Length: 416
Ligand code: FIX
Ligand code: ZN
Image (cartoon, rainbow, N blue to C red):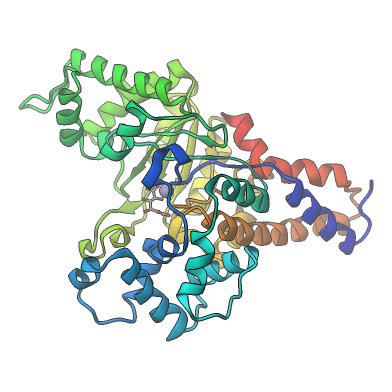
């Protein structure tokens, strides 16, 4: 069916978005079998590290005193500070209101216990179905770290496969703190060591490949991933670069797994804030170029944290078919920036990219993160398609539906 006017265009885009089966390719959510790692409910929502960082903009309490509070008390303080004493206009505070609205709650009630009683009465299985349905999710991808003791315990015993929660093998510890990783690996029976001259023996490299391969199989990982600092380089002779070249790349190639690189995070610039204490820095896209050019038979999923890196990453993506740019990560996951990045990507990549992932840590955030992103992506699509219609291009509903479905899942599925 031909789209002739703007009203039909808007309607077609909205319908296509509503019918898309979303693949959320990077989250920090866990399936039910991970027990306490499955975070949901109002107290978890309010103690999300994005909200804690904002709370400290207003309160004078020393960091230690805040961390000494129970989770419920922390949530109460965040609530009072950001939702009662101040206006929730920031993206992450607005997100809480979106969640309330979609779940049919009163967004004006100031009594936290009103919300608590709603969340406490949820049956988890029904709730997972309900939220997946509200969002239009097919599946989400977890972040699975074999070096996390709480998580490893579940993989060792008690893991129950749930098709809605797929795995991604996360290797930050190996690449960013190799000494720490090696000592754990030795504990688990892998013969690895770093010599005094900081060389890695053939046996060590082979044992690390064995470790990665075993965990990728065990998790049935869709991809392997790491977050990296702004000074990430493949040409600095570092242990990290050697591990990537000699272990990570060969395993990704053998197992046909893309390598996800999330570049630009400066961890713990303010340790007092704990998880909320990370910042960012502008990185050098040359590391991405090096990998894509040197390993054309390996696929790379890349996102960058600094706003300043976004344009050059798009240019790299135009140069390499084995590179897929994804999402608006963390500090660039704000409406004004998402809009700009999405527009820039469409202008230089057409529809061959993954516009969003959610990065959720708390289950209900799926609702707000996707609702907000859908609205912005729809806005950019209206603008871009209108330009085609204005020159007399015959745009069809089928075309729009295909493009939208690719954006929200198809491009990820095809790439991996
Ligand atoms: O490294 C990551 O995957 C980041 O997304 C997290 O470390 C970060 O804390 C976060 O939650 C950002 O959204
Ligand atoms: Zn993340």
